[in-house]
Length: 298
Image (cartoon, rainbow, N blue to C red; front, side, top):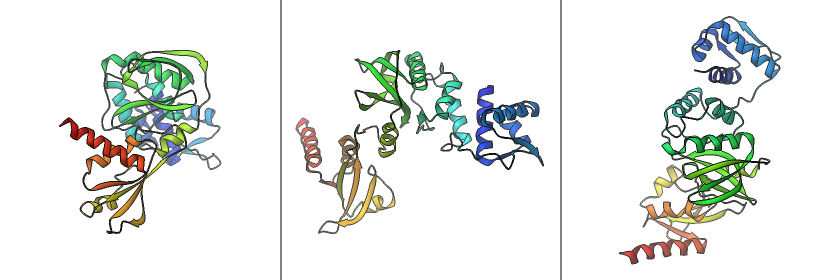
């Protein structure tokens, strides 16, 4: 474990719990007590606080401020798993751990899933450049899926179903780019300001099909009696809600708020014939058109 990793994990635990056993600190950092005490000094200097050793614990002095520890969404175990994955996956093996930690700290890597990761031997240098551009807030030019993209602003990096993407802004529009589909990225000299709309988009959408504006599609979906219990037990539709609305036959009508029609259509198709899109009409027609096209191919 590098010093950067060790002090990062130690600091996160200390910020979260406000104290840690001396022996636990040594185990966590894989360092001796003297090294951990040096880490305490670095933390004190950087965060204007005081750390003391009392009754076998390293802990903050009572007058030290509370800290919003930087990766509070993730446990230490999750962060360690992420670091392990970054060290062994071909897609990430050339990425400096320090870079990843810094991106996590400033919330530029979000929603990372730890069960599996996309790999790709040909994406090492490209990924390193993208990470660097996100960290430095510099615009990128690149080839994405065979098309040249100029002066895109990489806002955030995230994962979905084990696949890594970055959310980029170009000409005031936010768009998702799959990192393994990026070729020949180049960091440009022009910098950019982070757009808080990126946070809003990621929070309001639970798929990679996202809207680049504030206009969400509100869809109403009828669920028949044979499968309704599954929809009441858990959220299957994107941003699913139920407002106690039913059809004349008594079937519940669920509401799904989506940023793009493809966030909902594949799910409805999986549940045919038990689901029916009632609103909006254009989404309902799109489903019928897709099904007719499929039948015609038979």
